[in-house]
Length: 347
Image 1 (cartoon, rainbow, N blue to C red):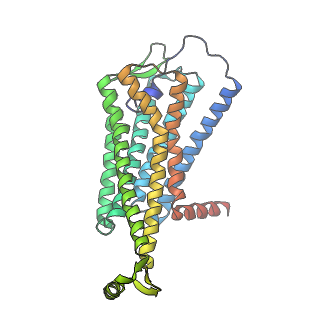
Image 2 (image 1 turned 135 degrees about the horizontal axis):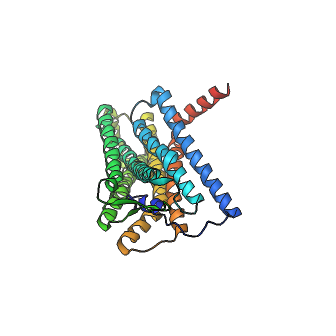
């Protein structure tokens, strides 16, 4: 996010070499082919999620609006930022596409990646509130809060992406158009990197810790109530008259069973917590190396070799590929909808 805060520096700080580029090796051709497949697959997966949400009525509600927002940002990354980055890789980091596409690359890269990162944060927050306060977090409130988070996500991403074009930093292309990057103002680089990654990183870690505490406590409570000592039988029988639990004598104790709906909600909460945990874990693994390098480069003026900048940049881009896969894998409604769509296409 150094270039324009997030991807800007990585993806945008391209140094052109004066030497004529050498022919690509077999490894280089294979790498570019795999990156092209990653770009195409990322775009198709996110478009499939968007089409499913638009087509299936059950998805016209929270939290699927948050998923749609994430899919839009990931589609933007796959449709604009990744193809232009791939062209830049093909030309060995020499920018040959002109000033207009240079600006487009920088702005769409920062906008899409920042919006995707904050969308992961919004989904984690929504899951936490729905697990912790599922009675108070009613549908109308949930819809209002989720829409507000979507607006704030895109406002944050837009503000970070446009700042280089309104005077804080300068988007730069060299006279012979072989470079495309942003001249780094240290204050802008640090603030934009914090806003695009480190702040949402702190939020998702805190949220998942709270989710783990809530779901872990509920699971422990259910286990503790499974067999109750004999001394509590009389009190529990009295409570059972006012409680939905059923009491069954079991030798020197009593078996206590949670109502089916309560057990189902507990399993659902733990499954949601697992999904959020994997989503956050993949998000951290994909973006952390890139933003560590961006922060070091901003604070220490440390020059990172092109090859590592490319690896970390494409690792971050791959998060847009994993997001739809993770979310839909843990949601049977999406799996059923995809299966029905594919069957309808085949027929």
